[in-house]
Image (cartoon, rainbow, N blue to C red; front, side):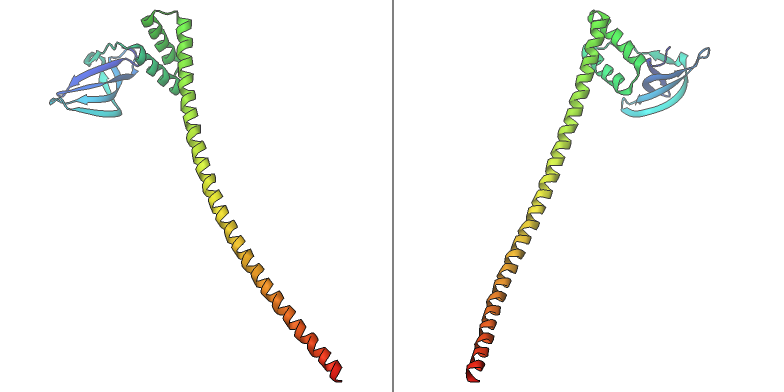
Length: 186
């Protein structure tokens, strides 16, 4: 048994599925990361990384036959987790499966992984761009509302100044006329 091997263990009327997280050399013990449990009624229960110490003699190795698409997905996962050893192992298995030269296959998988990452980044920027457009549109709308309020206030002020100017002219005319009347009377 090696670390990373997929295994199943049966005990207490349950079957546990997962992988060997840690194998202790020279001992019959290993640590299993349990991902799924099937009870005696056949009901499935999923666990996210529950660890249990077990004996290797209790475990049955599960041979998994992967399709080409499975390798692509697993290689993407290895790239995201930056697990170089797992990545190399998957690329080697995938290249044996497709019988292409290892170098061409490795470059193909790397390019596919980079393309998928680029698509995810592009999608993230598209969402960010839309959020910024929405924010700027909102700010522009509020700014235009404030400008309209300022224009209304300016127009009201101009009307009041015009009224005051008219009143002021009328007042000066009355004062000027009184002074002229006083000069003529005097």
